[in-house]
Amino acid sequence: MSVYAKFESELAVRPDDIDLYQHVHSTRYLDYVLAARFEQMERCYGMGMAEFSRRGLGWFMATAQIAFKRPLGLGDRMIVRTWIESFSSHGCRVPFQIERADNRKLCCDGACDYVLVTLADGRPTPLPADVVEKYTIRANP
Image 1 (cartoon, rainbow, N blue to C red):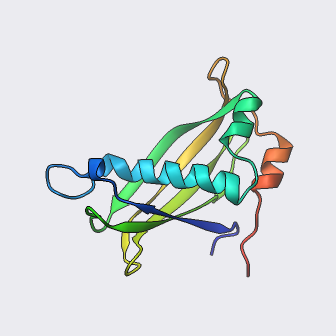
Image 2 (image 1 turned 90 degrees about the vertical axis):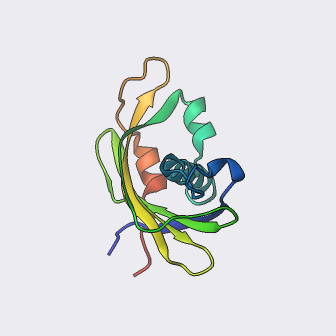
């Protein structure tokens, strides 16, 4: 069970997400995770990307892994669920799940490791204590 709260965003498949096989191209799933994460950072944590930018900070995706279960197609709506699994001195691990909105069947899951960097030089920087505090939202028991 996750120690940290899980958050959901609903998104829709766009026509330009469709590949030659008439389903969502594999690279778009990470786009969905990123879009949901940006929205959740603002709405759920109260500290969005604009605040990080004002501080001269940004998030770099160091690793990403994804396991595909079933495809999404044109017109489908999805639920993108993300949460923080753990913090490191310079970043965090964010697992995710993407489900079809109509039947809640899992389409894919995985995790991304993010590193906080300074925008001026792109180098990793330690997580500020107030960021860890804002992003430490515990799950309901």
